[in-house]
View 1 (spheres, rainbow, N blue to C red):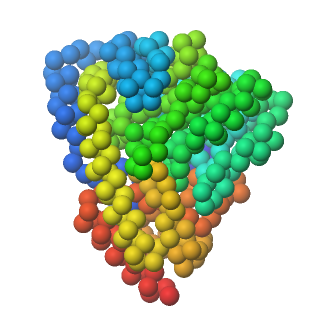
View 2 (cartoon, rainbow, N blue to C red; view 1 turned 60 degrees about the vertical axis):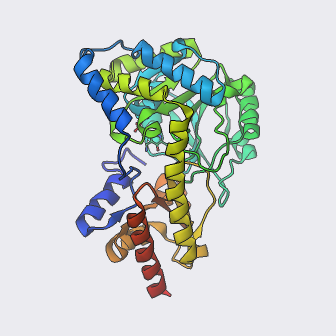
Length: 380
Ligand code: PMP
């Protein structure tokens, strides 16, 4: 796979516009935005400096990130562990550019978020793919161990996982920690979905695993935590020495991130737990509504814990298993845009699954279910 000119997300959103379809493809909420956050950003724009903030991020935001993870994930962190970046994407880029030397091998896990592979390659690295195993999307530890060779330097993980919404448990992370210690590997963990977990499963960061605490980098995103994807405020969190190396790359990628949004993110992270619980309850209810609507219409939805997405098993739903073809048909014929899970593979794609985003209001979700049900009924 060479770096794509347009992503599958843009492609599907473009088709949704062209055909006037409901867009359950690209992951963004079409819901009221949190007024507290808008007010905080407005106040910061008017009342704080709009000049370059410190390169590593406003000290207030770096401390707020550390405190938030202390409160919500039991991590012991300080501002020295945090580098603020322009979105989780830049945190991924700065981390990979800091960690990879030309010729290094990096293990990626499919299905994978589309930015990882081009970034590994731009850093001069070579990617080695392993696959999660459906329908539970378990990470096969024996395959992971077998993929580690003399040039392997690191592993990129994603929990909760986009597209399939599953999470890595403590035992799996501990086993990965043993491998990382044995082979002296770094672990870059994309945790941008950490606040969007709906079934009570605890999100566990590799930073919480003693064997990984010094060798893991955690990537977070205010855009995801506060459901405003356009904000592009994110961060990398790691042991201070590692964080300093990542800052060295951030310095020449974007240098800084808009200060008003940093101030707002800092205030937002200090909101009471009840605010985050209410946000999760709102999104969890939308997820439940889409899942039950689909199930009542004969679709098989795979179990998942987090993210804004659910995955349909096509064969088990009585639909053709060519997910890419079906997604093209659904947007044109049913008026619903989705994302084929095979688009999250760089090699040997797993077909047969479609990703749907549920962060739309109830009426939109109900209409999407009705359209999908009609399409399915007409096929049969
Ligand atoms: N990683 C994953 C797994 C994502 O789903 C996304 C956004 N869709 C990102 C990173 C990018 O986050 P940001 O918008 O903060 O750059």
